Length: 374
Image 1: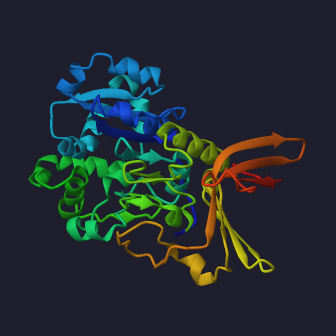
Image 2 (image 1 turned 60 degrees about the vertical axis):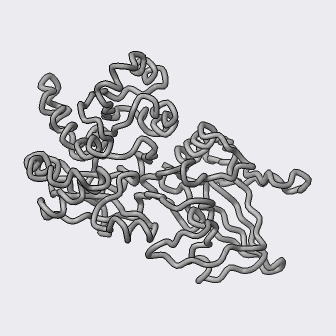
Image 3 (image 1 turned 90 degrees about the vertical axis):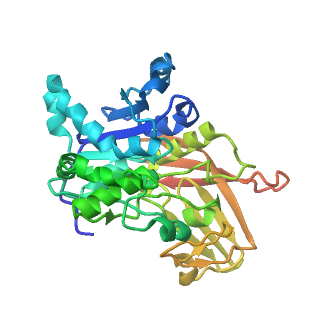
């Protein structure tokens, strides 16, 4: 990727998603992770009858700190509502004549699922490499081989998040009727992909910092393989969990830990640091803000480049895996303590292993000093 040359602010991105009034109460913690970012522009779309039958949903969202604007759609099928999100966002901006400054500012339109976690600062950094004046279709596919075989790799998978530049949204809206031929496709993201690639003749710009996360099970090996600068995560708690159940099985607590670690370390969150102790024949892997793992062997460069397959069964594409480690102990991030003096910033991270409380080393404290973290 070339050097960054473009600068965008949060006011130049318009986030859009659709859900229903029942599900939003179970996915609210995902939304709270990113949608209360200062000055964010976001739109929630509900099916019309569903919204009318739940009169307190607006008050509920305000109470939870979600100030996204709300619109309704007469389209009952979720997949089709998803497909229409870019149209709905553009039409909203067209109608908002009273605030033309917002319309002029928007350079990017971002669509995701209601359980998509957006890492806003990382997204803004990523977009520095892309020119919003070009018609760009930005996102990622699944890493699950069976899904790619079934649905294809030509389109951005919706849970990972899809970004359209402003010119592409305008083209998409102009060809709305022509693209309705794809409304029978499996999902809204596939409908969008067929319209953009087959009608508009624009290919997906794939970026691996968008994470669809379709695999099931223990994703420790994938996370430890290096996911710093991630832009999105998807399917957390429905397919996988960042921490084992013995550590925490609560979504709100998990989101809170992720938020503390990410807001502290930003693009360095999940960055890897590897240490060797040749006297004890051990390797120590710190995944910043997530885990500390001790391997009872010296990891090779090849080991470090491969993904430890901690999950079962599903094949992953475009990545090389290695077998699950048998002699390994992992401690998971619990809390952060920050102290500041005149010229020193010190972060103390507490990592815990709750599988054996009789272990005298059930807690590990990792201290970072004199670091400049944005």
